[in-house]
Image 1 (cartoon, helix red, strand yellow):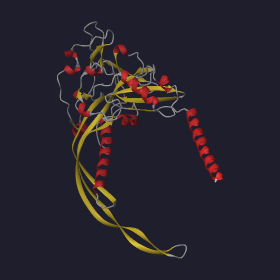
Image 2 (cartoon, one colour; image 1 turned 90 degrees about the vertical axis):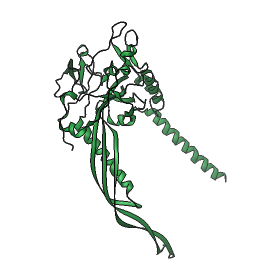
Image 3 (cartoon, one colour; image 1 turned 45 degrees about the vertical axis):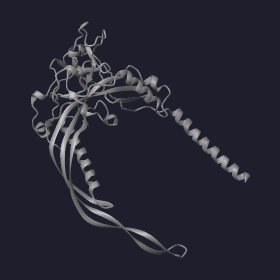
Image 4 (cartoon, helix red, strand yellow; image 1 turned 60 degrees about the vertical axis):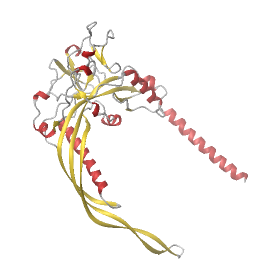
Length: 382
């Protein structure tokens, strides 16, 4: 286990940030991924080019030293806008941070109105870069309809029942980790060879066969590998297996953090802190190094692989990535679908139609019965 600072509280937050007002009517603007600009949600006016996030002075996306951060992260790297209040959802237990005038809204993850005040124990680490939302809602809904149509044995009305106004975009927290691994390995390399064996079969006849043997010899080696932007999700509002299925999030396209990209969108605060994410990343990278070392062992097979890894140049970033989220009820169950807001990749759960499954089974049984009948009839005619 990697040592470190105390874990941050589990939270899903509406980021308390500065507002961007429309120059025409004064209403609040939101980031429009289709227009790639801040657009007024009331009158549709786009913000002047100089006011868009893309026109903001370019910053530097920094890699932070992991060892230093785990020992002591400065307070200047923590916290959002202080003019906010925190609430806890009594239904799904998510903790959200709202701007003062929005404190009466519903939970972004489950829709419940059962929100109670919550006092945070420690301010979170601020993200310094993000992937701007690129896939707009129209494209998401079209993609979801196609996705539903392509699901085998799905209920016929699934698209109509699931595609309601519950589709919403969120920015999810991720951690990225870089590291350089130097590994030494030892193993027993196995080389197969064959000998001819004579035996007597069940009829008393003498036969020969090839018998495989393995010769084991010691072997050793070393390798070096650089890991770049290994992703670890910091969210628990969206299941980890769904996020893995819509990855990757292309970190080469990250831009410096700017409030304008998040205007009008929900931001979840990380629920897996730096210590937990670093531990998960180290475990994943170590497994990859062991697999690489296994591939280096000569011979036809190997056993007793031992790997020693030295880590250096370990850095991290805290980033935000866009995801479209759809949570819906069908029957007595809830289902969740996630769409990568940058690449459009889709993954999710869906119900199955028992009627369609039974009809498919009956069709297979009927087909097999026809084949058997035709076979028997052909033999009878002969």
